[in-house]
Length: 401
Image: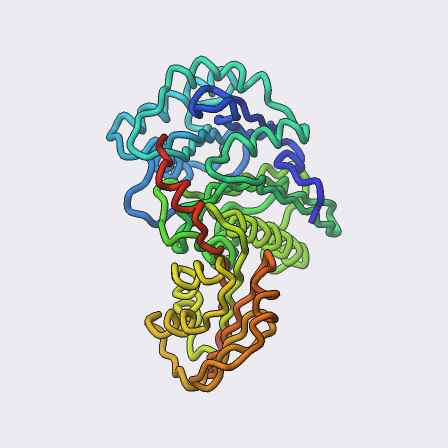
């Protein structure tokens, strides 16, 4: 992993983020990430049946063509649930941007995040597009501006980058992500853009992203809500000159680096959940099936009672075992062991006595581990979540104001 990560780290990418007026503050709210040459784009998307208009437009384009030049992302407005006008607005913005940038509108993808059910003020976006194009650059500053422009209730930047070296040369990967609330599995869980200068077959890249997403992005739950706009995409422009094929040593290196980036961003999203004070990692081992392992981590991670107990630094194993009991997984409560960090709190159907001060010290940490041993098979799973604080209600009780 590269410490000073930015989205234009791979060769041939440029980016920017500016304020066009979608947010009530002066913060950046419109981002562009572009490639100097045509690039493949693949993605994974929300499974919510209600999808934002910008997203639906981009999904259709990615499914129907191979090469793209730019991605436009606005925050402050989801461009969702406003009828056919939403797609028309996204088409218009992409087309006008393309005129300034020097490509076709169908080579420009659109994504939106923010308030649902309100039309985007397209005129202020259209009038800002010349500035968007003129401010594109490959510097760390322009990349960080793009990062800030996609943030909604996020409190920290979420960026990562890596470089691999193989016999044919160096390949670079970088990513940014936004995500703080309305994050739950069975989707991409956020908006994230990954750039890479690798030369790889589009179908191979797509299958790799889906594989990695299953154990990273789709293993994050902040509040149990599945949003209508969430997406993770990879832009690959091949400018490294390094061709990577499946089942090669270089492919293994690339897969490992991409996984590390996606895992890092997933952890950052969970840690930055709305109102969160702690990152929680739930590990389940010894399940009879992979589905049982998944159901167990999912149930614990989305339990408000577990999450509020962690916030209150209350080592309440009863809430954890209860969440396991209603998870739908095939478990035997008499065989389960539960640990908070290294502290055993439940074994063989019984809560264990423990030193409350030791438990407090564990729960005061910013990262909390919950280990659950089902002792019923060979399947494991892992998921990240965060605690629920008073601030979560405050943030979401006034989101539109």
